[in-house]
Length: 317
Image (cartoon, rainbow, N blue to C red):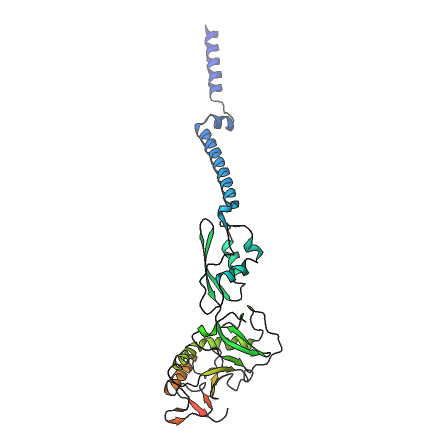
């Protein structure tokens, strides 16, 4: 009796030990419902990712989403003698633009902007919009001529940055007559269109001309109704002379206007360029032919650079 009881106790102890024995983690995980659900979700996500990748790859390579990047659609201003067909023809010679480019390409806008900006009459691409499935809307800032450089027996158009321009501009459709930049010395060849002039004088003078555009436009409007002695040239003969007016404005009637230092490079005792421009506009308003000012005859040399509110004239520099 005691022996049977002892065996029952031993069997119970063995069962308790078997029941509470630690099992390996993978056995417990396989038995858990959350593990099976997790495996299923991961497998489903993998299948979805694979399908998305295949769909993306087919769409990327599809002709439906192939952009004709050389087709020009930006508006051309009337003062440029080019058609959209002319620009499209030029762009179609670029290897990158004519190959198959998908509208889904990550750097598409950046790469296309670089090609468009290589055109000598485009200063900057300001906007590229993707229009699905396969077209682009492009907006640009055009290079606009501000002056002509007289050099090496010819006259060469430049913009406000001093960049040489192609002769594709209709000057008659600009809102003022382009002045000549004269009087500088250089032995450098004329740059190819789209490249800046390799002389700092030209870029600096171009910036000053761009600042003077309101005056040139005023003079152009005035010439329609009355006689005017307009500024026709920017003379750089004194550009390397710090004690002289580095920018001279020459008029058609032979007057020499001492502007002073280039815009943005004024000396400490020199009036602000806005003040000098206002004085010059006031002078032309009082005497469009530059013959007199405040009931006094105007002499050949007219100084603007040293006086805030006065205009001084003399017979020589």
